[in-house]
Image 1 (tube, rainbow, N blue to C red):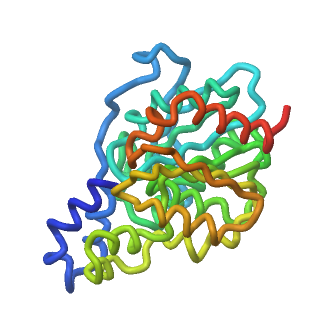
Image 2: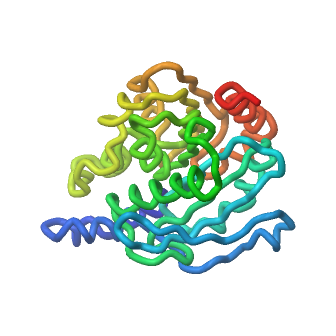
Length: 268
């Protein structure tokens, strides 16, 4: 998300009056290929390819956990690729859950070019893989969305009977994030990834995390989204954490809180 703001600052004059597809180039900052593999980390995992409803082939990692009866669908932020999140995904898999860590179109080894509508379709294909090919019932799946992935997760989860939804370092809308740094110029992005207008449609338990020193997605945006969300819900402030160090700052208590949430919404 930091990359998004830097790109917006550099390209704002260019974007005015040009097609919104150019705004996609500002929002999405993909890295092609795979930089880390499960084998390099010494963990069990396989690369899989998903097929979306609009015919795009999307790359993902499946990290199985022996004996697990629940799964986490991990939706990452706007920059890099899924392989960069493998160490974090492995930590989540250690919480007695299978994990599907998916790239968006145009990221990693995925085909296509990212767009808001496209990444929503990618997330639906990922959930279908977990419930279909992997046989995990939707009510045993927790979706975890970080930063931009939180906006994708909210869209995916609305109206679904998921076990739960974890939203970390996320926002009310992309426009609100940009407005915090660039004021009225943020309006050129339109009302994209508008989680605030969708969060009321959620039908599953919610767990929010946000660092109180987040200078990329302001802490108050996470709080505002939480306030608009339906119950049951909980908000955890990560004291001293910024946008990209929540896992490191949160440490063991952070993962223990996630485990408690998993155990509450997907009991054995």
